[in-house]
Structure formats: C-alpha cells, structure tokens
Figure 1: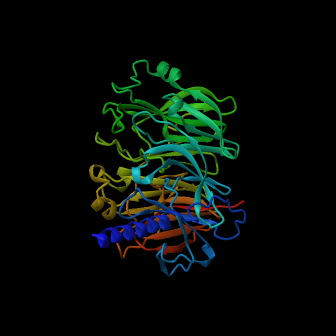
Figure 2: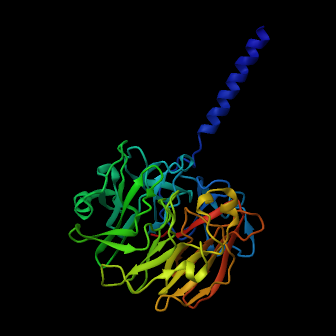
Figure 3: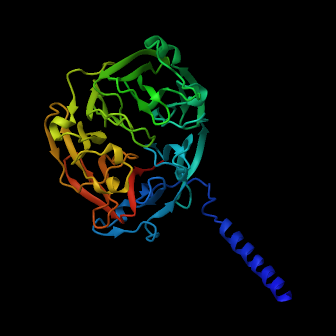
Length: 442
C-alpha cells in the first residue's frame, strides 16, 4: 500500500515536470521584431496536404535554395525557419508586413480579425498587431484593400452589416467607416437584409475589395441563405459598389450580367488584379455552393472608367471546355495569367480528398489586347485550391506556387520574368502545399 502511494506520488511529480517543460517554448513567445531584413527575408506560406486548415510559414534565403533538390521544410531547419501563428496565409503584404483576415486555422478560420504578421529576431512569423472584428452567428470572408501604407479598407460587419472600414496599416488604427445599407436599400428596395436568426443576407466586401483611379470597388452580395452563402438561382448579375476614396463617399452600384460571384467565399483567395495600365480584372469561378453554378469568366473595368467593359471578356468554357474554370488570376508585365482546370471542376466534391488531390490545373498567359490569344506555360500542373491564389509578384518577377499533395508530383514554386524566362525556383515535400510567396523588407 505504501509502495502504491509512493509510486503514484513520484509519477504525478514527473508528469507535472513534463508538462512544465512543454509549456515553456521561448521561441514561441518571441515578440521581438526583426530589424535586419538582409537575410531570411523570403517567406513561403503552406497548408498541410492532409487539411487546408493548418497553415505554416517558412522564412528562408532564396539564393541558398537548390532548385534541383526537394526540401522537407520542417526537417531542413537550417535553411527554413518554421512558424505557425495560427492565421490564414493572407494574400497581401508591404514592407515587412503580411496581412491576414482570419485566425484559428484549426477552427476552420472561425475567428475574424485583421492580423498583421511580421518576422521576429528568430526569423519566425508572428502576429505583430491585430484589429478586433466581432461576429454575430456566421463568419463571412472579408477582403482587404491596401491603398498605401497609411490607408486601407476592409469589411467590418461588426460595426454594421454593410459597413466598410478604413484604417492605417502602419499604426493599425481605425479611421472612418461608411455604411452602405441605405444606398443598397435604394438600389434594391425589396432586399431582405437579415434572416429569421439575425444572420446578415447582404454582404459588402466579402468577395471583392480593390481600388484604382481613386475609386474603391466593393462587392455587394444578396444571399438567399447565409448558412452556405447561397445566392438565389434567379440572380443573374454580379454587383459592385463604387466609392470615392478621397471623400470616402458612395457613388453608385454597377452590375455585370452573366456572373453572380467572383472568387470563392474565403478570405485568402483574392480574385482581382490590376495591370500596369490601370485596368482592373475580376475572375469568376462560377461557384455558388449547393445551388447551380455559373460558367467561369474573366471581365474588367478599364482604366479611367467606373463601369464594366462590355466589349472585353474571357469566357473559359468555349475556349477550354464545359465545366472548366479559372481559379487564380494575376496581371504581370501587362499580360494576364490564369490557373485553369484541365477537366471539369467538380463543385459538389471540391473539398473531397480525391478531388483536391486529383484534379489538375495548368498555368496560362493571355494577351489582354486580344484575349482569345493565349499560351500554356511549360510547367507542371497543380491541384485545385480554393484557399489560395497561386500567383505573387516578388523581385519584379511573377512567382507561381504549384501545390500538389500526391508524392511524386512536383510541389513547389516557379517564376517567370519580363523577358518570358520560366524558371523552377524550389521544390518541397508534398506534405506542405505552397499557398503564398512573399518577400519582406524594411
């Protein structure tokens, strides 16, 4: 009996000691911001192949990467510094900051907010600052527009169902807000703004938030059901509110016929891009959750104008086949780059492992002056990925992440420069699907 009591006491003591050892991880607590960005200034964001809801960030030196070698990013910790701040990978950065609109990846991006990420003195990505965004019952995606280092905009549903918030990205201080509800009511008097449970049925900035020529363009989505972001079958248009940035005032609502969504209902996927001439492009998958889907299209607003261009469109299905979609978009060197499925995109099973790991998408370059002319890039195909836009511009080159979860398929990053030179930049183990490529600097 005495032995049993003594054994239990020693066991509990050792167990407490083990727990205390696990709790203290000094690197995880390092909030000291990095000041020298001459090394470990590139950041690759990845999602685990087994689940899109675990995001990891790896800082590294691009010049030290051997493009012919495949890296296990966690095991090769001399070259890649691993961190997991439990946010989405984001899609925008400037200077030494990355911005994310969702936290708690293991909770399916369930915590909204504006999270500014940076590197600490251990070269790990950490949350440098954040702005609280409350939620009621359901958490919609929110897009972010960074006009310059002193002005940005996002959808602040916590301050009103249709409210656009301005803020200072450098100080992370809130500024003015604009409630679009009265203007939307005038535009569509019969619109139902809440369901029986108080969920918001009219969302602003959940699909698009972008700017050009001193105008902010904000998506307006009329939902049939908030629970699955369902848009009514009879809806035939995609809507944008046009806001004057200097006066932060509403101007009008414009609409594009033949599309009802742009991008996907997650904060990480950015479906808009501007070219160097100032044209603003929109990429629609046609996704409408469990309702019928629309054909995938790309359309634009021309520079100097505030209405959709009726004479320019890339209609994916007639060019590539029924059910094909464009999932990512980026303008670079006044060309348009699209990530297009080789087979019909199976919307009803898009989150199934077989679909996520089996469908193939290729990379294409389009001539925007004659969009019927395009070139398929000579690089590996990738899996589909609802949470990512595969394109990033870094060092005046277009970097293209190539996510593939199945062992043996290329999984990594390519780039193309202004001369059209295509280059394999890095290859990584298939258990980390790349989602974003950043470079941070003072």
